[in-house]
Image (cartoon, rainbow, N blue to C red; front, side, top):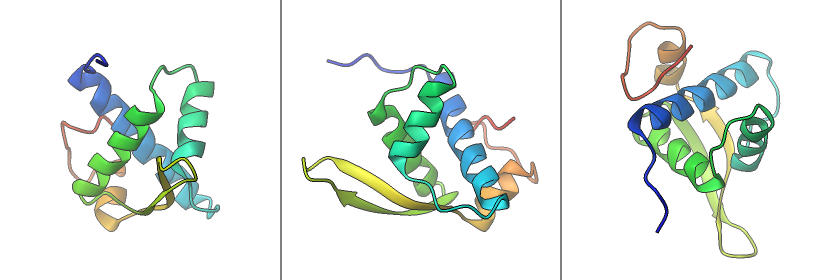
Length: 105
């Protein structure tokens, strides 16, 4: 059984993801995927698994901060693509309000 993650680590991961999508949006780049986000976070030295990233992206959607398309890949694993910010997600990153479940920088 996989060890449960600390709630602060979960909040940090949600904040990292939301900030990445926000920066990508501001630069008007191609929409991100869960694979790109996981790879970028891993290259930065964070030790979050692919499933941690998928769960955090889903949590951000549940909070109405992101929208995306979810598909199954050839191995029947979840793959998230076309990730985009909602207006509420931009407002959170811009610090128009706080959410203790998302640690933005």
